[in-house]
Amino acid sequence: MVSIKSSTWAILLIQLVISCIAIISSVALVVAQAQSLDLNGLAMGPTLHSIFVCFLSFSLLGSSVLAMFGMLSKKALFLLPIILISIIIFIFHSLLIIQWITSWILLKEKIYDIDLFIIIIGFLLVEFIFILAIYLQIRCYRILQ
Image (cartoon, rainbow, N blue to C red):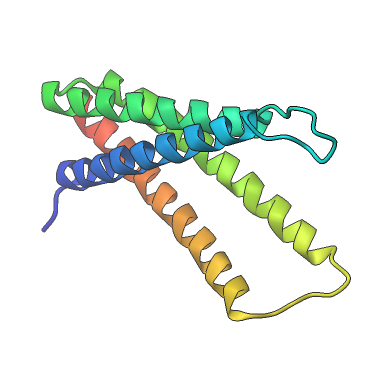
């Protein structure tokens, strides 16, 4: 049987990899937006949304490392930042899904294809993974107390 601590370690490693990927992609997006021009030739800057995603990915990386040190030293307080960041990312991702679905519903011509199905399944899978991560981290926090 798999213990809560080993499951939490696996989730922390997955979150560490995801945060590294998110940092690289969000910084690349911010840099591309900073160097882009609009149709009139005026310089455009990065959007607030992109900067927020950059901040979230950096905070996820830092809190993942802090949680790993907390798991090693058996200090429950080190798990609080990763729990809070995971909840914030879960809410942020949920709001993006709701915004995307409502904009799709408001379209006059709705297109039903396999891409839509894959996107919705992917969104639901990411949401499920974050719910599982939050659950395991809270359980591990209670065990370490």
